[in-house]
Length: 310
Image (cartoon, rainbow, N blue to C red; front, side, top):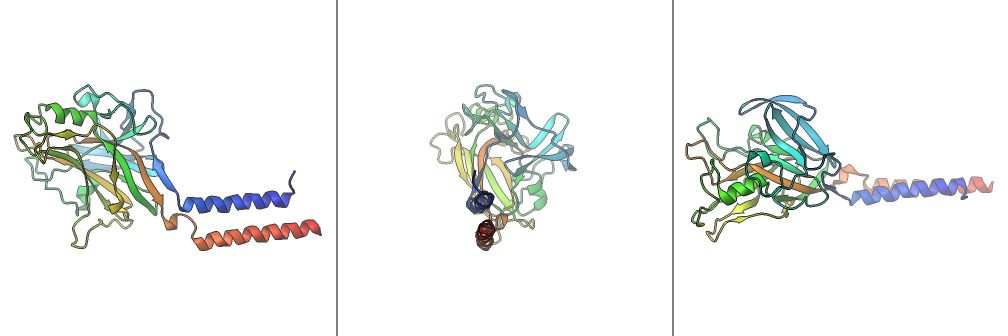
């Protein structure tokens, strides 16, 4: 058996090495730490923390956590918005009853993935909705969003369509009236997710001109009139432009609107998996702290050796 002072020295050395590796570490949030039965989903409620006003009445707002990220969820009887999580992969069933399925054969990794639902119309509607303003915190807080750990730096995530949205774009439904792009690809339609961010003080991230920084990802696209492309595989969404954000918000928008002026008509769903963020400098010890810890290892080791010799 090794002398006690050598065992102590090894333990302290392991601590220093672990701290050093965490400094450069990247965390991947894959939803696998959340328990689900086979072919199921969970859409709330999750530990309600507040009652908030929604478009259709008061909602219980709570969160669920995975990999250090807190995902918002809002519910009322028969309705939810924000984030849910799922392992359903039905690519054939149309409509609302299949709202938790990813339009793919599997999660990006493992079995579970996140599903987001929610939007704010870009234009005024017959419901009295104000046009979306990404500089308005109240507008952002009504969207799907997640909150990073303190000092974490977002990198990106994998994103794809939910089946409900994908089949609506491919075939049309009673709300959209036609497929994305039209029957013959004659309309320059699109369907996208846009991410925004606020910093730790709650300030919206803006560019040099004062406009909110938005990162777009098109999940359906016929802007060039060459035939609608509906995403059916996991794609990487680079979110590094929002690296200063502590909270990220997601708005779903598109060109398909109801004929009666009630706004966006496509199902405002998308799926996410393997969200990555880096540990910021303040989240782990600074180099000086690591150096001090290393010095402590040496001092303790030398002192222990001297006592052993005495």
